[in-house]
Length: 97
Image (cartoon, rainbow, N blue to C red; front, top):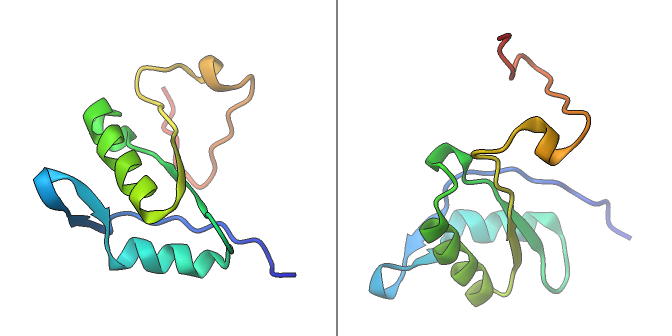
């Protein structure tokens, strides 16, 4: 049995036909590093770009073409209470308000 791994990455898109996206070498390598056999799972976090729906569609299409199960975690426009009763952020990632 292999040890489960969680890998965070950014970038790795390649151009595809008609202005679409494809998984480039970095994303493919990230998927290989997970050690998952079959269909790996990926969560896209597009909050830095405002959780744009057009980007989500392109990313989901690229994931489908790559044989990957994908979802989006949308944070833009939500409050913490929309997500959970407790939100923990460590490592100075949160600013005091």
